[in-house]
Image (cartoon, rainbow, N blue to C red; front, side, top):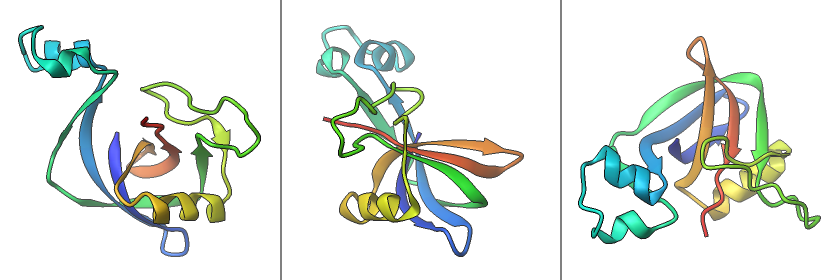
Length: 121
């Protein structure tokens, strides 16, 4: 899981910040927080790394979106991210409107092969 700050299809690169993104109970267990901590009751909690990295992206990464604009259920899961295909233009519009938006990235041999938007209410 990352906060995605840029994706450049021409340069085959992305700038992202790795984050820990878990449902509330799993977050509290991982960080050994008391169950009374308000974060334990949330649908999700995140912890930023405060580190931005540049990632190499494959020439044709699989891009997915959570809003297909056709009333489809594209949200996916907390581990997979969105599931409906997105064009580069659709993905660029989402990122422009959501700088630092959450995304699930899949790497193969150190190269990003999939970027899935993450729905956060």
